[in-house]
Length: 308
Ligand SMILES: NC(=O)c1ccc[n+]([C@@H]2O[C@H](COP(=O)([O-])OP(=O)(O)OC[C@H]3O[C@@H](n4cnc5c(N)ncnc54)[C@H](O)[C@@H]3O)[C@@H](O)[C@H]2O)c1
Image 1: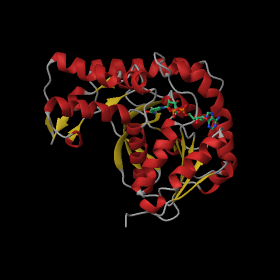
Image 2 (image 1 turned 60 degrees about the vertical axis):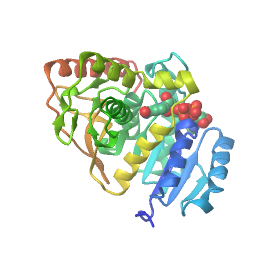
Image 3 (image 1 turned 45 degrees about the horizontal axis):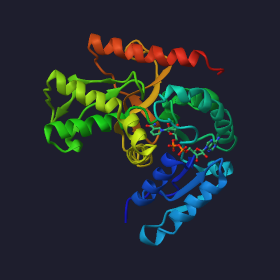
């Protein structure tokens, strides 16, 4: 029997490629007791719930149903994966206008029923929509989290692992900043067993470009990304519910962090039952610092145009 926490309810809003795959991942992992699916397209949520429930004889005892916002009342974590996704050639920022609009009603509906849970945002542009969720919910910032650059860091670790022929689980490496085109790699921190990793300039360029452009490549090939983001969301959810204190590159509100304030960006953060307990203080090189500021300023410029 897995170490399942009692009364752990997760609600997923938006049961498209990301939401449904995340639900399926949570079901297979069996670390939660209740899972609720909500979608503007009720038939879609119903169909996904039915399909997954038929797998329960082969998994464990997660109670799963298609619900509505009143089910948020007892939720420990509410995942938002609702809204438009990138079409081939679109950037994440291109989604902002369409998705900021739907967040108004989603957040209003959540806070109508829940004042104690953790909001975990996956919808893009994830950093800006996490900030929007913070402002619209009135929740403390530790309880409004974006998936941030956790997925990008996983892609980075995978590609470094391929380059060095080492299992990516043994690679420690971080992508920080926007989950998007202005993100940056921290080469100086990439290590195996505490030993720094050396790369040629060509390898660096190839690894980082492949990391940054991974979503474009997958969306061109199959229309959506789903498996790795689902595993990343599962990692955050389990770290919260099991009070792990794992260090994850989630998107969180920065306050006087390397000279950056009042914006959400992905940085290494300690995640436990309180949500983001602490942001780790990174010592950035001058070049990294300049890139990090550019990433922050890009998102702040977009936020300034929003009605918050
Ligand atoms: N954070 C990440 O790393 C990451 C990774 C992949 C995708 N994403 C983002 O996740 C989002 C979802 O992507 P997808 O591929 O699952 O899209 P999708 O089109 O497959 O699914 C979106 C779902 O949201 C539902 N929806 C739309 N408006 C809604 C509303 N107001 N309330 C409830 N449900 C609503 C739709 O009916 C649909 O089922 C996109 O914004 C995408 O860019 C983020």
